[in-house]
Image 1 (cartoon, rainbow, N blue to C red):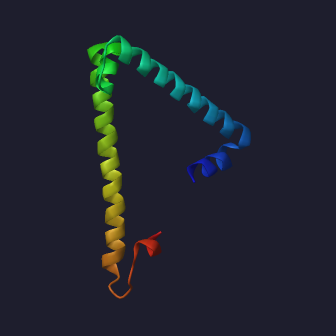
Image 2: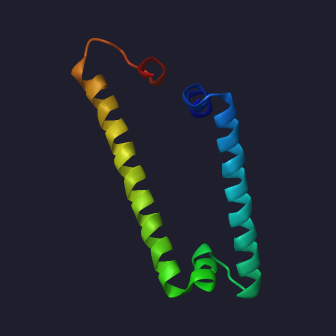
Image 3: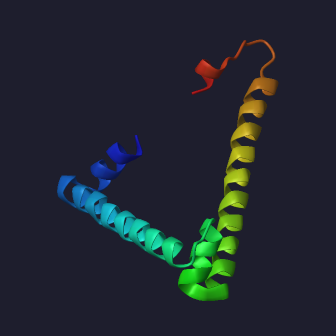
Length: 101
């Protein structure tokens, strides 16, 4: 669904170009992860980042993961709050998961 909306906004050519660009970024990051995990005998993503970018890189990675997880939690809480508000505000209607979407 997100790809359809992206293609609608960007157009076909630029949309396909963005997909190719992201694929190149993914391939580069996987190559870097494999290279540095073999060199440093790393067993976690944090260790790979420490081998590649030092202690500051590992700390930055941990901060980014923390921000991502907190942001995801906030979005889930907003969605759950909106759904509960809809369910509890109208006692006469019977809602199910299929009627809310």
